[in-house]
Length: 513
Image 1 (cartoon, rainbow, N blue to C red):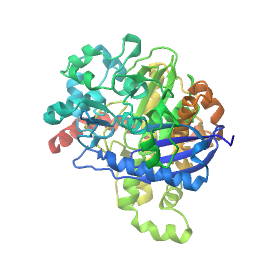
Image 2 (cartoon, rainbow, N blue to C red):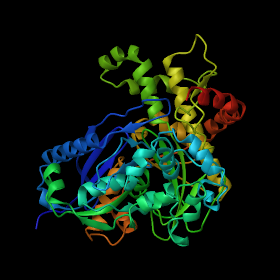
Image 3 (cartoon, rainbow, N blue to C red):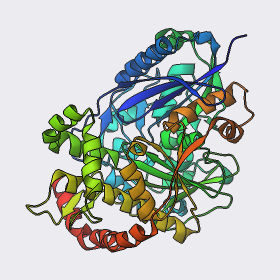
C-alpha cells in the first residue's frame, strides 16, 4: 500500500483553499480558486452556491494535478466554511436565494427584536445584544421580508451543511455551527424551543437538519457524482465539518483550556476552550461541545480586519504600484516598511475598525469605520498604520473581555494572512502584551479540515489526538513591554471613541438603510 494522504477544503469569504497533507500534517500541495462577494446594499453581503461549487471543483482538480498523487491514496477528507452563512432550499434541495453571508448585517432589526425577549439563552452572547449574523436573526429576516420564499423553504441550514450534502448526499448539521450560531444547547436537550417561540420563529426548527453531529464524525462516503466533478476517488470518508475559524483551532492545536487561537483573514476570530460553563458581558459562549466534546468554546471576533486592509490597498495605494514592482515586492510589503518607521499612534491618527459593524465586545451592527485626526501631512502609510493599530486595539478589547469573564490568556496562536506581516504580528503582541505563536502550516483551517478527515477515516481516534500529532509551532513573537506602555494612551482613546460616537453613528447608519 502506498503513502496515505488527507484532503482539507477551506471555504473562506473570498476563496476556497484545498490542501493535501500527509498523516503527520506536512503539506504536500495546495490550490485555491476565488469567487465574488456581492454587496447590493450597505451592510449586505451575499454569494451564489453555484459559484462556490465551481471554485471547489476547480481547486480540487488543480490540487490533484499539482500534487501528482493518486486520488485513491486519499484516505479521508474534511471541510470548513464561513459561519453563519444562511441558506434555504425546497424539498428537492434546490437553493431558493443567494446565501446570506456571515458578515451580512441586514438583520439588525431582527437581532434587536430577539434581544428584547430577554430569554435565558441570551447567555450565549454575554447577556448582551444578539448579533445580526446569527441564524435566528437571519432566518427571521427572511420570514419577515421574503415570506413567500420562507414558506417555500423545506430546509434552512448553513454553508457547511450544504457542502456536506454536496459531498455525501446527507443533510446534517454540525454542532460546531449549531451551538455557537443557532443557540443549540446539548446539555439542556438541544433546540431551545421556548427561545425560538419568544420571537415568533418556532416553525424554523422543523426546517433545520434533523441530525446534529460532532466534528470529525464520518458523515458518509464521497458520492460518485461529487467525486467525478472534483477529480477524486469515490468512497473517501468525509468528516463532519464546521466553521472555518473553529476548525482552525484544530489546525493550531488549541484543543485544551489556557491558550487562545486567533484566526486572521477577512476577519479576526479569537477563541478559547474552558472546562466549565462560562458567560460574561462582552464575550460569546461558552458553547457546549462545539469544538471538543466535554469542553466549552468561548469566542470574540472582529467582523472587518483583513477586509479593511484590502479595501485600503485596492482603493488608495495605486501610487505604490511602481515602487513595489521595481523592488520585486508587494504593495503590502511597502506599506509595512513605511508604517513600521512611524511612531506609535500614527502621528495623531486614530481609526475605528467597525467597517461592517462590531461583533464583540459590543455586538453593534449599526456602527461603521472612522478616522480621526486626518491632516495634510498624513500619507498612505499613516492611514495604514492607523488601520493596523485599530485592529490590534479591537483584539485587545476582546482579550480584556475574556479576562473580565474569567479567561486568563497566556499566549495567542495565530494563523491566516496576517502572519505574513511581522509588523502586524509585533503590533498585536505589543498591544496585547502576550506572546504570539505561529505554526508551520499557517493555513490552519485547511489543516484542521484534513484533521477532521483523519478522524473520519479512523487514522486518529479523536480530533485532539489528531491535532497533537499533526500541528507544529515554528515561530514565536515576544511582546515589547515598553511599546505596550506607549500604546495604552491610544488604546484607551480607541475605547472612548465608541462610547462618545455610537449614538451619532447609529443615527447615520439607520438613516441610510
